[in-house]
Image 1 (cartoon, each protein chain N blue to C red):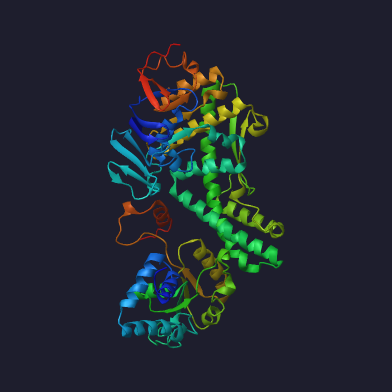
Image 2: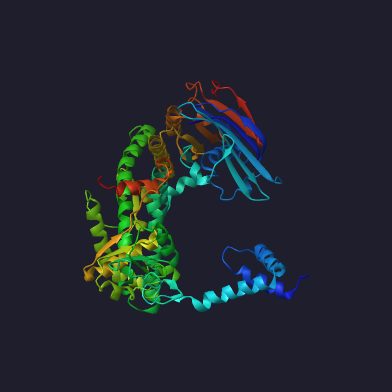
Length: 383
Length: 197
């Protein structure tokens, strides 16, 4: 998929901005706070119905304005054109999403239709944050490809809540929950086993993609790895039935401890995905630059995964990615994204592009100043 | 407020009903004010009757005015099948099919610790003596959600020692709809539960 045209009205600091993107790399240059990221945010709205960093639609309207309108001309890999429009009205707090002038039934139905991969500073938590940040990353990736997984995940969370309530009540009242907990334990094992199987399969495939992207970025200096560490201790080749029975055994083993703490201690809600470089834990030993490189590799892998699962090339949004990367890796990244698909990049410095994009005749650069975008044709990336 | 106190009081009562907001409550109260006195009396009587006359069947726990209920006392119904459901409305839904000619058992909900509902809050112990009484099959027809599923698991374990056949209703595609419009989760479960033809 590509964004061939973009129109922003009353959006952030853009009163009215129109631009036609290149099918290849689009670079937005400008100082801090001029409105570069807002353009990426607009693409995010058009593909995912929401911003990638602001939780609230109201703040996205230009200050003093009561509405915003975003419009995008999207072209699918097969050459079909879509006009996508997002309107937000602050008075009624209503957001509408229209594809070819027809309003979609639910915003959720849009997700996955226009795939997009976003690399922003906010996404950095995946490598630096807690296990829950990593679980969130793989849950979102698998859910985009499999609605069944999303369903299982939501049901698992509900069962977990119910089971924890029994444990907590029993702890407070100091009584034995008895056989009231049994159906919930059984349900937890049922749903949890499906999650474990899917996650294990995903991480295995995904690790290969990450290693490949990482190598292209660094030139084979380092070997990254992803390892799925399920909270339920299982053998590598265990099948569903073996995982389920192991899960049940470990629930029983931990039961007295669970009664003491009043919560469920084993299960996918406590899984970890370990990231390593040359066998060393990323969280403990990696530099800022290595974190960033790993993050970029994860995102490139996500790009390939989504492309395969959705049968559509995602749009790539890179917000301020070069700040921690050395020149060598920055250039390799630019070369790589030039071959992947359409990319939108923000940067405060033009320097990083010097010598990297001259060979890419399709590249376009735009200057952003106080919400006004001016563009210059490609080919003049000489510094 | 420039309105009569009684109207306010009535609106207040309506607003407590599910699905009724403040504006609707007011509109209903004013509508009742316009109704004939006779009609209002009939309505009021109907409300009181529901509380006074309706009770739970001592056999199946469904709502009824005569005990045992019409289904439990119907000799033409097959006494060897019991279909277990969550709510009286589920009985209504199943009766509309005219397919099932056995008896029912209404639990009065599903297991949900978050709402304070455990096995003791459901009419489970009333089910057990019925099962040991020459019943061939117990059909568990719970809602297809997490709570219904846990209830199914609980009951199937509980009924095992009775040596009775325990089944659960199938999950899958709604009739009369197109495959292409089914959501992925339903469709993948339907694939899982496929049967030989």
